[in-house]
Amino acid sequence: MGTEFPVASAERTAGPGRVVDVLIIGAGQAGLGVAYWLRRLGDLQVLVVDELLIGQNWLQRWDSLQLFTPRRFSALPGLRFPAGPTRSPSRVEMAQYLQDYVRHFSVPVETGRRVQRLSQDEFGLVAHTANGVIRARQVVLATGPFRRPFVPDAGRGLSSDVRQLHSLQYRRPEDLPPGKVLVVGGGNSAAQLALELQATHSVTMASPGPLWFLPEDIAGISMYWWTLFTGVLQAPADAWASRYVRRRGDAIVGTQLRRLVAVGQVRLHPHRVVAGRDREVELEDGTVLSVSSVLWCTGFRPDTDWIDVPGAVDGSGAPLHDAGASPVRGLHWMGLPWQTRLNSSNIHGVGHDARVTARRLPERGRLALETAVGCGLEVLTQRSATPRPRIAGSARRRCAPLSCQSFTADTARFPSRHLWASCREPGRASRHARGGWEREAN
Ligand SMILES: Cc1cc2nc3c(=O)[nH]c(=O)nc-3n(C[C@H](O)[C@H](O)[C@H](O)COP(=O)(O)OP(=O)(O)OC[C@H]3O[C@@H](n4cnc5c(N)ncnc54)[C@H](O)[C@@H]3O)c2cc1C
Image 1 (cartoon, helix red, strand yellow):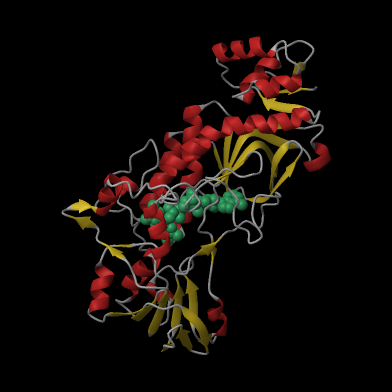
Image 2 (image 1 turned 90 degrees about the vertical axis):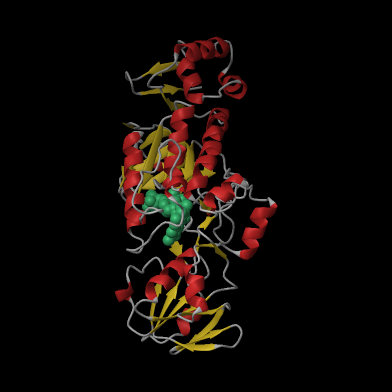
């Protein structure tokens, strides 16, 4: 997708570039979900870039990882998750599914392409990569909320003899020396890893509060179906159910760990870690635990240092947005926890948010275009590969008597179509190459 070409005016700011209507950064579930809906809803030129291969993110997680969502709830819009021997898919199956998804819908993805910096100039947003810049009227940031591991300061006080790993670094039990392991955290990662390690190590868990277990089934029906039927799963982010879950923390799916805690196989302290000294960890209730290793399942923080766009993030680097819409023109977030609903950052919830985002894009594109034209700048747009005569015709009729300024302000639900139409007006534009890019100077 996209075409290499020199952008005369843009060279002043970011050098030659490549232009697309929509650039999606991140080809995980969130990015692919938006690409799917964009394809269904319009004819914008879309490019998805990712620094990793498709699904590699899942492959990098621990070996035994089994998703906590059943297969039916681990699918993206438009493609069922294949049946398999287990109730929930493994990380390898999930990676395979994402690869199949890209193939099935021919999603235009370029892998191995890291966006090192995202900036903004008068033309729109500029993604800087090792092999050049990509300009886009709109950028969807789908780079994942679980990327930069967070470890509490208490870890710094521990002796170097104590092996410390974050769940992102852990692969298998042999990564930790024999002896006492402290698993810190109260979510599904902590629960899964405590269960795995209790077979080979002496496991103690320190969770920030009492753990909250949900059975996998009630009356033989998956808990996920119950939450779906009752509307809890897809509750809006500000509904009482969402507020309750936020206050209580993530529920642990399955009750196996609860049984092991009950028989003393895994020791559970529902208290935060407050300090680490030598080979000991202190909890907030004063309990001191001696450890040989610590597995931090303590979550993640936003990874937004590379986003150099004023107004995109707050002082702590957290995304600023309203249901994913950034206050920055043309910028959108996807896959954030609680973006619109309780399950926004889960696979099952991504389809809804992706659709909301995809629907917003043409409208936002118009704003970016207005800015560029309003500033008296040269506007570059890609001619629609398959212009629909009806739309192009009506656009032409509406646009013909208008000045460039009012043209963009008054019309343009689909800017690329309208510009395509307007570029055909003699004296207003020139066509440079068949199937390539067109330029309109005002
Ligand atoms: C251990 C674990 C288990 C989970 N299990 C489940 C589960 O069972 N069910 C469920 O519904 N959810 C689960 N989740 C939550 C969520 O579904 C996953 O984290 C999922 O991977 C998030 O998808 P995403 O597309 O938002 O982000 P990611 O999958 O993280 O994808 C983001 C992509 O962006 C790319 N990227 C980032 N920065 C850049 C850049 N600057 N330039 C180019 N590319 C970039 C990355 O390479 C990555 O491929 C789990 C999460 C974790 C951490």
